[in-house]
Every structure is written in structure tokens, then in C-alpha cells.
Length: 76
Image (tube, rainbow, N blue to C red; front, side, top):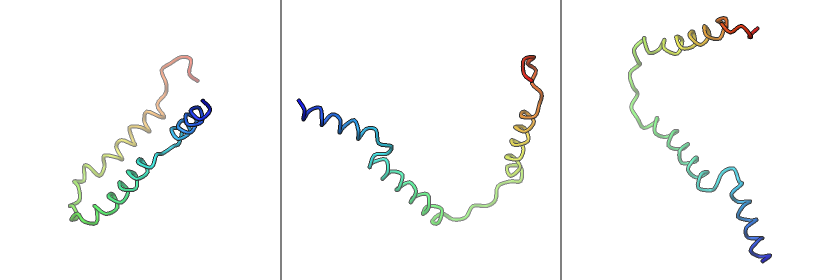
């Protein structure tokens, strides 16, 4: 019985680890692929100017929402 409980404790400790070897290997391979593939692909043409201003527009809308007054009566 003691051996069985000891094996169970070892298995539960292994499950509590943050990353398994398999997950770590996957992340390393993914990192290498993300570093190598852009070097192998041909350069793309720049996007249209409208798409370049899209993040600025999103940030403007978020700032407007952040600084707009709340319509609830219990908010200071």
C-alpha cells in the first residue's frame, strides 16, 4: 500500500508542473518556425493607407469610451 500511495503522489506532482516536456518541445518548435519562416518568404507590398490608420482609429474610440462620462447615478 505504501508503494502505491508513493506512486500516486509522484504522479500528482508531475501533473502539477507548469509545462510538460511535450508542451515545451511544441513551444520551442513554434518559436523556431516563427523565426525562420519570415526569412524564407518573399517581402510583401505595403498595405493600403486605410489599413495603416485602423489601429489609430481603434485607439481613438477606446480613449473616447475611457474618458466619456458614465450615465449611472451611483458612479462618482
